[in-house]
Image (cartoon, rainbow, N blue to C red; front, side, top):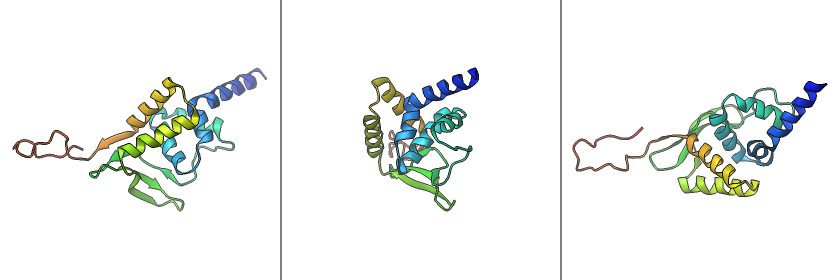
Length: 153
């Protein structure tokens, strides 16, 4: 009985974190993005968080969901691989058309959740870490420099 009360308290506390509240409150396509962002940072703890937030969670997700962290493609769009509703993996699907759209979306999410300043900073750090590659030209690229003939990957 004591273990049950402790487990209930831990579950209550996890649901009260900004991560738990976000998973409970955010719906629609952005939830898949948010889950990918959280999973990228929380790794193993994500399974526990999902178990306390979602009823009947069996350790797996129903599609659609993101299968990779995000990358910035050559045109500046934020892309990731997506598993669609029928289970097909679509490579480099555009998630946000620009960094600005991504920032605005996460800011609106933070506003909706009424996050504290420290929680906002943590959310934005998670989002920043989630973007693992920038495939645009090197911003310091000087075409006149004979040694500057590369792309950043």
